[in-house]
Amino acid sequence: MATNLTDNVALQLLCNTAATAGGLVALISAFGPVSGAHFNPVVTIADRVFGGMPNRDVFPYIASQLLGMFVGVMVANLMFGLSAIDISTKTRSGGGIWLGEIVATLGLLLVIFGVVRSGKSSLAPFVVAGYIAAAYFFTSSTSFANPAITLGRSLSDSFAGIAPKSAPGFIIAQFVGMALALVAIRIVFPDVDEFADEILMLHEED
Image (cartoon, rainbow, N blue to C red; front, side, top):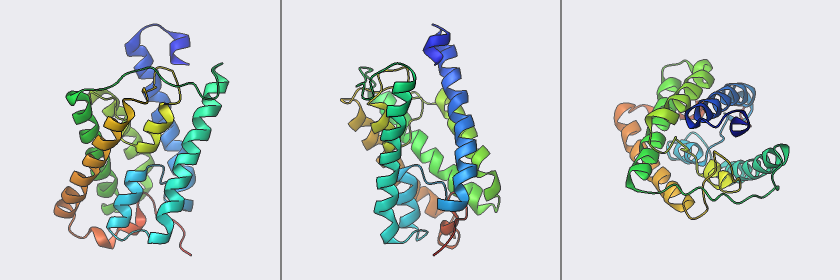
């Protein structure tokens, strides 16, 4: 939509940022009470590492994240007149961009665990959306910070797309960011095991 409205790249990024942030507030608010609003494999894995999720749930969560992302990108492509699968040609690579993804993912996890530890999980939709909106501009990579998102965006030759050849570098950087975040969270929030089951928001137990 952004490229249909303007040729100005800065305005296109601003449009993309606003749509992403608004969508995150709505989706986290709606699905937080059901699943904890886990839309991101690195969040799910981090939650498992700290004991907030049983092993049996990890694969179904990640499979659902990937399936949802692929279905979502196909629907979006069709809405805007593209083929359901429209492989991106947008190359995104280089040390600075990969560092941006490390920073984006590290920061996202610190923010998520921090807001939950504060006892203000009800603010998580706004805090996460605000962080991602800011990270679109303060990181060199425009903050994908999500392996499922990265794979999905490789199937859309649009402003937000990423060429398949660039995706592995982003995903590796995201997992590096996650690994660093696991260490940082343990240091900054040593009681993380006590609140990990509330990530992103307290969800229903069996």
